[in-house]
Every structure is written in structure tokens, then in C-alpha cells.
Length: 431
Ligand code: HOZ
Image (cartoon, rainbow, N blue to C red; front, side, top):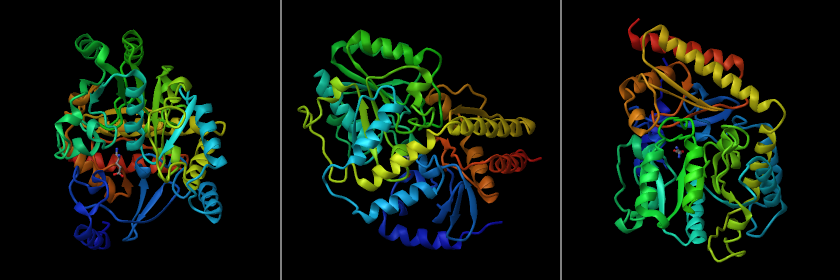
């Protein structure tokens, strides 16, 4: 049985100086009980905690590390770039190179503006949508999460859902008065909002595959229906692909489903483990952004050379022939193996997968929206989490997050994970 004395000691010290001991609530293990692991180092598919325990990692820094931890090509490129200086606050060719790679991969991207996080990307892209349409209202979907900007903290997923905070204190009422909400996967609800608010709606923003209430794919025709409704009402369609970008397919969910939004928010993989976000879209719309146009948005570290370098190497790595397909195939093998293990011991499990993202809900399914996701048995999820951790498998410490796969998760790693799941699920079922 692994023990965690060093993590426990460090967590105690951290809580004295950092609220809750963590710098982002999702990592605090509040969704599963217990205390977070403190990490010492990582390599490929593995993490080592400060007590010397090794884990197969399906968090992967909450998605960015699609080439695995400490990928030698990425790390060496960052080290080379660092020798040239860490930040200039002036343009470099690296920004153009990463923008070109993004434009090649992501169907909706004709121009790209880099920022430093997913939160910055979504708040900026919505300012752009409002500036471009001269409308103020936006639609966001229940259980979708777009970072922690005031006006988006409404019925949000991720840690907001994990901690059971319907709304956050500190968000002024005025900030959310133009945020309309609808359930994920319901076109009727969107139609009703358009009927009521018609010409005031600037945009719909959504995670095309929801990844922050667990992983919940769109039902047949949903994304196409949204595309059509936006066209009809002169509103913009915004895909928040911070999670799904370069993960559901190399060009994101928009490539996989063949639906092109007007604007896209990106993050996570685009920075290869360094802090990068971006928003991208049709040139005609992107030309509204200063200094090309009047919509102001800026950042001291935006386009940072180390972050651009990590992003460039990561996008190049995942675009090599056969790499993505192999990852998806092994992700499917893993999902099927865990599903079969649950079935064998009579535990109801709903498995969802979109490319290299996946998730297991402890219920009969189908899971199509926040209400059905929330019907997962959270107690069983928590037991599964801790039993797997004891067997050396680390995954998001919340039912309302997605699991991530990397190029470094080999067949052998997948088999080891399935074996751990078989033992853990049998133990939970009392076999
Ligand atoms: N936004 C991440 C989950 N959807 C959480 C990030 C973190 O805790 O590091």
C-alpha cells in the first residue's frame, strides 16, 4: 500500500500560505476526498510523487501534454529558446510559425491572437464577438466551463460543479445579466432563447464536446443545428476548444464533426505544457482586434518565445503521420477494457470517448447533458479513484473532468491500466 507522508507534510505547509493549499481548486481532491499528491517529477506517461510512488497519469496537466511528460524534443527546444532570453515584449518569428501551424490544422482559423490561458482566450473571444456584432447577450450551456471570467461563471462545470458552487460570490449581478443559459444538447432551448432575445444575441459559446462535466459528446445533429440557428439569427458560433483542440482530432472537434464555427478559443495543447491560450477565426472578424481594429486586448507575456516554442514542437509532434490515429486506437482499447471490467462485476458504467479524451460515469446512461452527468454515483467514483491510485493509476480527482491520453501511453501501459481497473472494480463490487 503506498503511503504519502511527504505529500501530507507539504500540503499542510501549502495551506498556511496558499488558499486551500492549491493554485487551482480542481487539484485539491475535494471531489474524491483525501489530500492532493505533491509531484516530484514526471516522464512519458508517468508521474512520481514526493514519496517516490509512481503513477500512470491520465491528467497530463489537465490536457496539454499530448506528447507525454518531459518530451525530449519539446524540452530541448524550450532549453535552446531560453538561452536566447525568456521574454522580449516584442514580436518574434515564433509567433508567426505557431499561428501558421494552427491555421493549417484548425478549419475555422484564418487569423490567430495568442494569449496566456484558456480563461483569457474565452473572455477575449467573447469581447470580440460582442464588438463585431454590436450585440451584448451571449448564450452559454449548463455544465460547460469557459474559465473563471465573471460573466462566464454561470452554471459552470469543472471545479465549480465539483465543489457544488452554483455561482461564485464576488461576481456582480451586472456582470452576468447578459449571459443566457441553456442545457447542453438541446436545440429547442436555444431556439426558445433566440425567439425571446432575437437580435440581442451576439454569440453562442460552447465546448463542442463538453469536457468539464466529465466528457459528454454532442448528440447527432446538435452542432449542425447550432450552426444553422446562428446563421439564421446573425449570431456568431464560438467553439471553446481549449480542451478539445488538437485532441478530438488534430483540427479539434470542428474537424471531427465537420462543423466550422466563426471563432474558436484554444489553450492547453497549443502551449505544450507552457501557459498559452489563443483565439482564432475568420480574418474579417479577427480584423476587429487592436491594433488592426478597435477591440482592445493585450498581454505582456503574450506570444512568449518559450511558450511558442513548446507549442510549435507539440503541434508538429502530434501531426506526424499515424501518431494521432495510434493514440485514438489505444484510447479506445482502454475504454473498452475498463467498460468490460465494470460489466463483468455488474457495476453500471457509461463510457464516453472523443479522440484522445474519455471518461467513465458510474450510471446506466445515456449521459447527454449536465443532469444526466450529475446522476453519476459520486461515492463509487471516489472509491474507484482511490483504489486506482493505490494501484498506481492517477486520473482527474473529480467525476466532472475528462481523462487524457498521450503518445507515450503504450499498449503495455494501457494493459496495466485495464488490469488495475479489473481489480479495483471487483473490489468495489465486493467480489
Ligand atoms: N481547468 C482545469 C480543469 N478543467 C483545472 C486546472 C487545474 O486545476 O490545474
